[in-house]
Structures are given as C-alpha cells and as structure tokens.
Amino acid sequence: MQKRNILILLILLVAFSIKAEENKIRFSIFASPTINWFKSDVRSAKNESAVMGYNIGFGMDKYFAEHYAVSTGASITNLGGKLKYNYIAVFNTPDTSIQIPANVPIKHKLQYISIPLGLKFTSREIGYTTIYANLGFSSHLNINAVASTEDNQATLDHDNISKDIRFFNLAYYFGGGILYSLGGNTAIIFGINFSNGLLDVTKERKDKIVSMSFTFHVGMQF
Image (cartoon, rainbow, N blue to C red; front, side, top):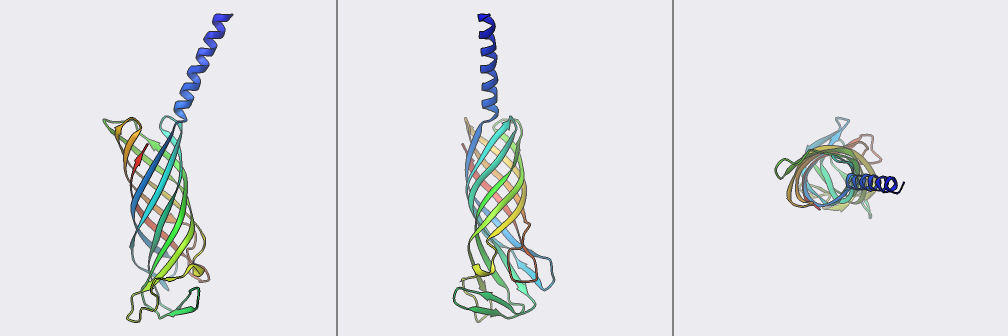
C-alpha cells in the first residue's frame, strides 16, 4: 500500500510539473514603429496619406499548452493619419470651434493606452529561431488627440481635438514573426502586425472613420 501511495505521489508530481511547464508565462518589452492611416466609408471624407507612429509597452504570454498561449499586455500607441473633407469641417478645441475649408489635408495624431487580448502560436525551435503567429482584439483608450492643417493659414496647429475623438476604440489584429534565442528564455522579437479598427474614431459626423496600421514589432522576451 505504501509503495502504491508513493507511486501515485510520483505520478502526481510529474503531472503537476508538466502542467506547470505548459502554463509557463513569458514577458516581453517592445518599442515598435508603426505606419498608420484612416479608412472612410463615404466619399466626402478621404484618406490623404499615412503617418508614422510608435507602439511602446510590455506583453505577457501565458502558455496553456506547449505551443499555444493567451497574449495580453499594455502599451502607449500612436495612431492617426491625414484626412481631407470635401465640405467645411468643424473641429472643437478646448477654447473654440474652428472651421476648416474643404479639401484641406488635416493631420491627426491620436494617442491611446492599448490593451490587446489574443492567441499566440509558436513553432518548435529551429536552431536559435522560433516562428510565431498571433491574432486577437485590441482595446484603445484615447488619452490625447491633436490635429494640424497644411494650408498657408495653418488653421489648426497641433490643437487639442479630444472633443471630436471617441474615448474608446476597438480593433482586430493578426501577424507573425520570429523569436531569436539568446539563451534560456531570453529572445529577440522581430515581427509585423496588421490592425483594422472596428469602431468610428471620430464623433458627431455622419461618416465612419476607422484607423488602420502596420506595426513592425521589435522587442525582447524574457
């Protein structure tokens, strides 16, 4: 009976060890450049060009199996783009309302706290390299919004337009990349993600403007 109990205990210890390994957690930090632009559902609001931004923060991958993890984290994300309206657009700053003439490009810089939630899939390590793919949804909480015009009068010059920007936004994302091992659990991350907004960035207008971006993911995993 005692030998049987010891055997059961050993089996349980092995099972718990395997389970602990399967539920391993990996943290990462990253500072990633982004390319951002807008997409409109009406012809009266047109995307003029993309703008550069950044995504800085940390991530956490909780593995529930050897090659599968739930991913989350938090970051400061800069999104935006240039829009051109074919009508007079009104922007509300903290002090006043400003009318922008039709067909004047307006550069938006929007800053968010971003919290993603998704799945991550990894391959077996090949040499020092592991390939990964990820997908999920990201919540964006707006913390700053400014706009500038490029006309001769400079009607908007880095003016705060937070009143015209929705506080909450949601996007889906997918992408992939590689982890290059430096030994142990430490690895350099190189990847690319595509993100597509699901909700209107602006408010009090008839058009629906969503944010799109490519993120060139560069970081380090521990």
